[in-house]
Each structure stands twice: as structure tokens, then as C-alpha cells.
Length: 275
Image 1 (tube, helix red, strand yellow):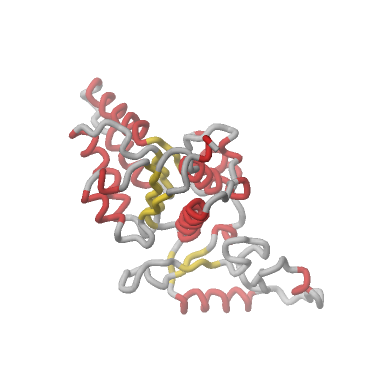
Image 2: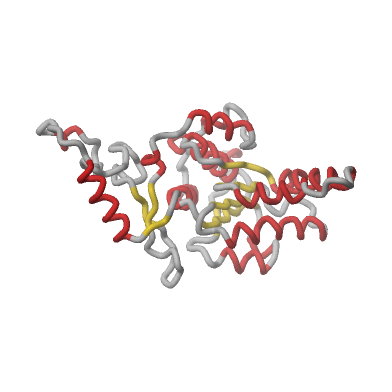
């Protein structure tokens, strides 16, 4: 999501946009031409066929009572003039997905169990609001990895930078920066640059969380990235998929997840690959 604003600021922006609509005649039955459920009308910035804002152009955040971002709204992705093809191409190169995975869409997801439906709804909710953490956990074969990959593919198709990594790959990426700094004593910035890159991603999806060996160095590296993303949770999305509950990792991590509603979703549908 782009800039956040209050409801009154959004209304004022809409009124200004409506007044700026060129004086021209719309066909008398233009409302009948809108897609079912569309709320678009002249002056609204959204696309009439947008499945997220339904043409309104703005989406509301879902932070709890008392949070400084509670009740704020932001511009929907469809109102940004469409995805920039150059950005899509650039983001695709470093997203962690194959060419086939970049074509994944929610419409191709098998909704074979309520747990899967709830998890998909939770991930899509985070994507719509462009904020917060969500931790999916449960046994293998329930589609958790596919959900994370689809979230990244969908985001990139909208021109939003997103990256999919396993936990082990994330740590290996950071370790590579640390090793580069050790070899070249004249430059100690590669590790910090990689940390900052992961901290700043609009959407980061970490799969197979807790599968990597948790050395003291790994715990410190995790903390440097995740603590910063927690502090910035109002403007970026972090998704996790794991076989174990969050408290198996640490109470520090679980307590931060608890600040989001929902923070974790336990999938208990069983292994679909064996069915």
C-alpha cells in the first residue's frame, strides 16, 4: 500500500478528483456496464473491475483499536496506473521464483479444506493492506509453500517488489555478505547492505522456517532482519511457513506474532499429496 491517510483526507481527495473530472457526457447507462459488485463512479481512482477495492480506489487497514494506523486508508494498487512492466521484469529477476512459479495465481489454488481457505484469506488480507505478519504452520503437503509463492507472484504482477526464500537460503544469503566482508577487509558493508535489503522489501515470504540450523550467528542474523520488519510492520508484509508452531522457535518471536490478528494459522488438513 502507498501513503496512509485518514478517512477525511481520503474524502477530500475524492471530492477534488471528482471536481477535476472533465466536463463530458457519460453514456446514460454507464452503471449497467460496470462489473457485478463494482463501486466505481466518475472521480474515483480505482479500476472498475478491481477485485480488491471494487473500483473505489482505496483500501482500509485492519490494525486493532489504539494502534496509530487504525482506521487509516491507503491507495489501492489498481489506482497507481497499472503495474510498471519494467518494474515487473526487474523484480522477477530477484524474487526467488521460477518462470512457471511467476505465473501462479490464487484462481489456481485448490480450496480443498477450510484450513486452506482460511489461510489463503489470511494471506490475501495481508496483501490487500500491505502490512503485518502471518505465520502458517502445520504438517507437510497442505499448500503452505504454494501460498507463499502465489503471494509473491501476485505481488510482482502488480509491480510490488516481493521475494520468496527458504529460511536456510535467507541465512546463506546473509552469510555470503559476511564472508565477502571477511575476505575484503577494506569493505565491511556487504553484510549490512544485504540486511537492509531484506528489511526494506515490501513483501518477504520465508518458507521452511525453523528448518535451518540455529547457531548463535543465525539467531543474531534473524533478529537483525525480523526485528526491523516488525518495527516497520505498518508498511510491509512478512509471511512465514513452517511445520512447527512459533513458540518452537522462540518466545520473542511468538510474542510479536501475537500482535497481529491473526498472527498465526494452524493448518490441520493432512497431506494432500498422499491423497
